[in-house]
Image (cartoon, rainbow, N blue to C red; front, side):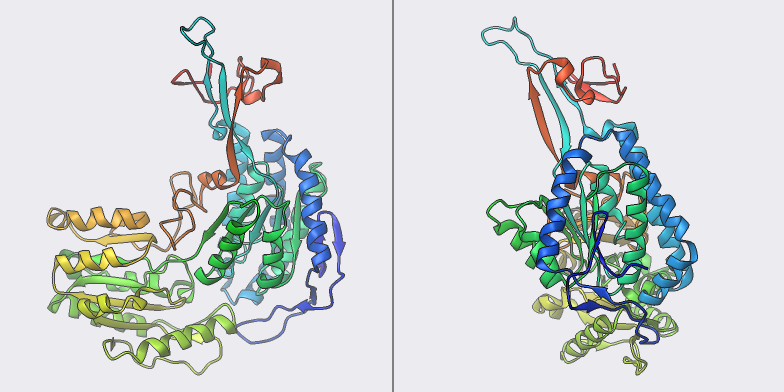
Length: 521
């Protein structure tokens, strides 16, 4: 396992400080002193990435697809070495890590298929008309092109699928951009193993030196230095609202601002319509709240229903189910301490009721599920209750009527998801709630929990601020590629000088919009 920084194909270790991984289950410090990148190394990395972009941007869809598939193969070739290190650094169970590894390689192959087919560039052609009067019509052809070097900030809760070779990296590379990953300090060994696989794939497919780099170090030092480098053209981030907003503001305040896509979490409200309270939904929700010890950006953190005996019964069942779920290790000591301190602050409020028992676990880095309830009027007075608590925690809001549910939905911030549980008999009476929900979320779910994000073209994983920094884009699925590209129009260019995607005879045989009609002609 390489403990140096990957500056393209070059290994570098000029710094004095190191990052060490540890096992959150046992608190054992794991082997490996991963050298933090210096300012000089960061500058060299972005410069090499910018130089490599000039070559990589000219690679065909087939060539880039071959590269992405090679990355997937090299990751699979790591076998148990990768799985064991990832389990050790994250505390995640074996089956979860194996599943996430499969998702990571599947994403890479999904983007390979997308760019090999080629229609994703959204080619639009408006043929010219020199005889149009009074002004001749120019020949205009438009398509999406890559931005340049992209920085990717690895996530803590997905050490594979949202990390070094995760969705941000895969979509940026697919779009023709070079990538620099800021490794997450919680899983440096996992990051290094994946980086080695990517470099091996780059060499075997003749990709330019600098198409991919990996740097160790803190977000405050390495991350902020990356964002301020003038050669960097975009960034993708998955993490907390606080850290995401700091980096977003820096990207916006540069002399030349750059796109910064941040996915910053969510409380993923669930509305329980009256009919749903009579059904057995408590166990399903308990499983979703505690999945991965509640460390999913799609964990249901708010449950909203109309006060009454049915809701009381539901709360009692949910609290019992949560209490019966075995506590799990959290991703790191810092995350666990933050969870416990957030719970302590919340429980000091006079207006809440604690529904679960034995709230705090003395076992280090393990978290107990916590459920509290609050009446709707008190929740409206306390907007801080709508902020995400990262971990197995949820709040039930007991509303007096439909109007109070509307007020609460108006008050909460933008969300990644919103779920509605109910039967058809409820929908006419609650149609206004559904309409309000649609304006607040990126994904609206019917009778289902938000955890479990399908990786496909129809998925939208983003939402109004602060769920993400730009609700028009997704960080999951094929449309994630659109974060790292921009449109360019070519006017009156000779046909042989145009990109193949825009040439008259459509040599790539992709779908294009020609004079208002989709065609492969």
